[in-house]
Image 1 (cartoon, rainbow, N blue to C red):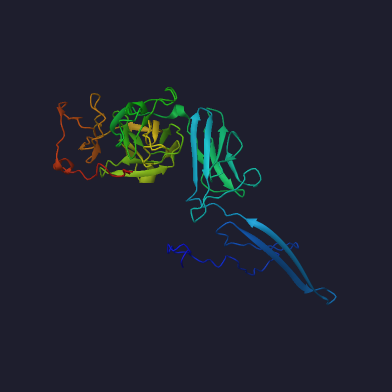
Image 2: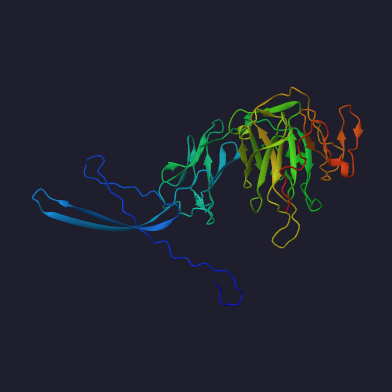
Length: 393
């Protein structure tokens, strides 16, 4: 079909979505109330219900009664495709973001103030008003006792959509004290937050403007000296993100001791979020890698951003244990954040981790990694790709 402009653009002719079906209503409780359920409501749409009752009275008189009602039926969000994120802002205060989606990945638009049963719930605390961003996102805050560990959930139509998330007190977390590697991405000159060590330490004690910006497709690998992160719950690893003008997604991976490969734990749209080692079928890991997936390096005027990519304030882990087979060598203090991701041996496993242009050999001597085409060559026992999981703009 031509669009009438001579451009020959393909157009599609939709016949409309009108249709009808007949459903029998039953009096299951024998109380004179007849009920029926319409199940195939896969998209939001208007429904016209026509109810017909007919029969014969005790006196033998035939009757027929009809009723009509029109209503707009909303769709129950898909628990797999919907997004529910809880960010701990400070002890006793958490922010919540909900993005409900149907099974076709469409966001569900509704007014929480008028739609009953659409709410954020908590086991212990006070939930603020749920505010719509008019773009499919809904936000609120939850206040609770800083010493408590409440669960926060999301329900639609009075029924829970996703599993409740437990809020972990900041005081229970262990914070990495070691930068294993850092790749700032391609636009490193404009990056004013290019020090990866800004992501180390307690996020409560550091200022809000202390963070590292990963850059478009950049990454940082963090660890705890002489310790491994151990799986224990749904929130083994919490990534604390510095808020920006827009959400910038990121990927979280853990290094597998058994294979030497990076294993995906999950992704976020760009907010503070907790991840589980169980998602990668890991019981422990020596290092956690955060990779920018937003690819953002320029603003609306195409000018380089001073905070390209996602900005990470820190990383908190719920449980650690002494490392059993060595330690990861730290990111060199005297090295440059050049973005050179040539691999070096990982002393905790048989794989590799990315590192800048110099590294500390097990003997303590400073060495320069191999250069040229052979620098990406695998060594015995090394199976991981240094650039695995990285997204380039």
